[in-house]
Image (cartoon, rainbow, N blue to C red; front, side):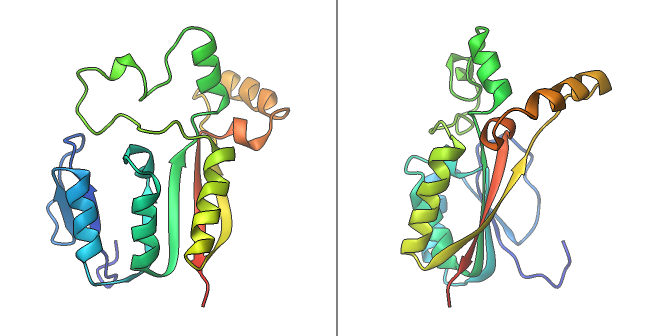
Length: 180
């Protein structure tokens, strides 16, 4: 990141990733302490980004509310869409719903998703909550992971042509802008 950019990174350290040594990054042992730190942190930022975070929280909207209060201009929220085609097929053929099932036993705490995120439900919920906090919804960016091999990728793209966007994509990012 450009050294002229003033930023703060905050994470509830669940031991999944190696900690980076940086004065602008703060790690906390549990999510509650993370939320308390952010509530008491006086500084505001032009953009607050919540990437793959809300689905791990107990309340879902609380951290989003904090982000809306800490931003002067934009809030970006990235979430998994666990309702996408490959997830449905995996479940249909006897596989679990990743990050929700019993396969999470003995995994490091904090990685399990607390919420089963579906774009068609999460999107209007976040838009309504943002509107109450004087933010308008700008746009959604959709992300579709595809197989690595050329042949599988071609077959996958053809299959996706006939499906709605919310079943194609496995991640999405919503952009909200503060209303002046």
